[in-house]
Length: 375
Ligand code: ATP
Image 1 (cartoon, rainbow, N blue to C red):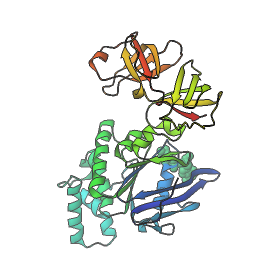
Image 2 (cartoon, rainbow, N blue to C red; image 1 turned 120 degrees about the vertical axis):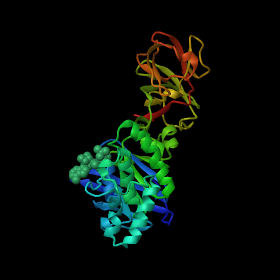
Image 3 (cartoon, rainbow, N blue to C red; image 1 turned 45 degrees about the vertical axis):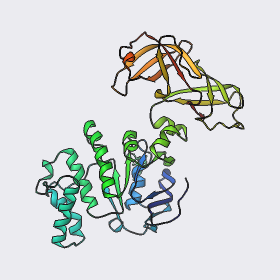
Image 4 (tube, rainbow, N blue to C red; image 1 turned 90 degrees about the vertical axis):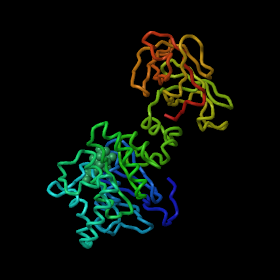
């Protein structure tokens, strides 16, 4: 991962940060930098090292190697309470025996800010997070989403350079999470603060972030804009972890200067070309090379009946099942010469409204839409 040069527009920079617990390497040589005022997410499965990395930035843990810089200055020797960062925890850690205003005021009081100043800053903050009249309420009187906003307000009132958020939506129900995703993004834009958000939920990361780092087994596999990760996954792990895909293993049967003809283990034969893959004319992959293929359900064109779509790869199939889920509906299609079920995004058109198990459909995709990786 490329490092950016030190400058004041970078709020946080990690340089080859490494942390082991005994012989287990939880975070391995992670390097990245985050421009001021951006929303940066670290996305990865449970146990990949996200929290350990965040705790090192907050100062609760020290790296074995590497450096952490905030606004261009190393903070390795700065204790957590002196670092210009604040952390919002999944369990929020609000004080139940204090009012909402007292919770928000807590950090300011500890810093010795004058009483009159505290009052006006708390009032201002409560109105900025959309809860202007709730200062006298008890924490128990707030809804889940309101508690969330107070936990963030309590941190933002301290004007941190960087706000660290450790899966703060994890405890909320699905509907509220959807709503809070949008609210959090708006709050971040409104305050112009740098947010670092860790999650294992790809939808949260994709919806809110300017940049997402995909983490796996202690390392960053790819850092990029959500669209980059989705359309140009740099590794098998990213291709499999971000978004849905059909996956196959197969071998190259023939190759020419443009691409390959491949045969999958499931019996499916297909053509794979550029663009969409970094297949160079000089690519070393030759006949017999084993590869893994990924194809997004929405990259598949489907028509009812026998009329083949105008795509490089086309097949006739039978609908095995329809998984109706509004705009995210899918159908599973069985191809005659292959054992797998193809996951196809259901077109949102009237003719597909009544499609059902057993219907004949034609499916196809362009040769550049399959991504392939070395196994
Ligand atoms: P989750 O999403 O489940 O919280 P994570 O990606 O945040 O996971 P970490 O909590 O950073 O993962 O843990 C990374 C790995 O390091 C895990 O295998 C964990 O068991 C291990 N680990 C974390 N803290 C310690 C510790 N203090 N001592 C020993 N092992 C630890």
